[in-house]
Length: 448
Image 1 (cartoon, helix red, strand yellow):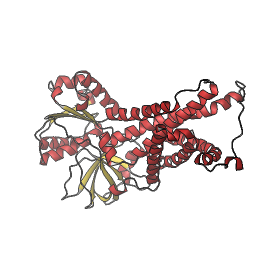
Image 2 (tube, helix red, strand yellow):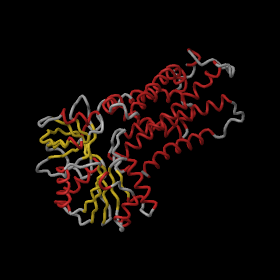
Image 3 (tube, helix red, strand yellow):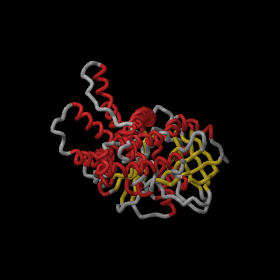
Image 4 (cartoon, one colour):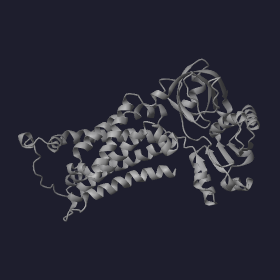
């Protein structure tokens, strides 16, 4: 989380610093219109800068994965940058439109404007600046339309009630709106800014964003990490609303570490959905297990829509929730369906023990006898100590309760997978009582 915050604020504050440096000293007479023009430029730089970085993150580049410590962190930063771009774009729209609204309401008089260069007058000197001036009208008109489209699409991405399939199908259209906004920004940014660091950095970000948008629109993202597979086994646990699917992948699958996830396409119309991998990798069997819980319309329909023998596409593996640290003691917390990466890790430890002492907390509203027996078998094979906590029978897990149950907790690293709010509460409690923030590992398994 720290790296995400640093990257977010470095982007916004870095562009702010460069913009201020390019615009100092401020005009001696800073009237309403002059201040408004400065704010229009500033909000425009922030908006296109944030959107450009968000577009670059969408490519799922391996080096970004390493820098942010996992694709789940990259998606969280992508979301925050999208919100930042939305806020600054709305501010930009208000700064642009505000004087017109004020004039219509009679709150101010229209300022006198000199005529814009046109025709032969504009072409007296064949310069880039002259060419950009002739494009101002289409840039303003197209930019406004692209702004409305981008706001709508970002809203679809943020409103969780909108089905995932609609989000997935419409989100790529942001790439089209982005390309139009790049044109808008190139034409309407103050020309002198292009020779300043703020213009150079913004330009480089837009170049990266345009490349990412092209990859998005040509469906190249993740193409080299997609592999064919077939469902070879299914298990349903209706009372827990859980479906477990075993998929046999083809021989080119590179393998995976326990704790990683993949995007799985069971239905082309529905598209790819992220699922944590719940099995260790064995190249002899080439099987991968995915466990899903009915948390939305798609996962609720999954038991009725998939069957043994169906062809699937698996894209991955992704993520760095791989239990790698220097601690000899680990505490795992799997809340609900968040138990899946720990199942994969236990299956790995059953064949390749690492000598670490591990306590596993599994918090769940209820658990059927068969899943419980499977979990206990994995725990026994891996040599892990299980603390099964059913909400009604055993109560809820809190930081205070964990500290009481495991007095030596400070010597361990904490690995959490489950609802974000639950994880945040545990992180806050444990770090307040002496845990180093770097020793709390949380998978942000939320792609919206």
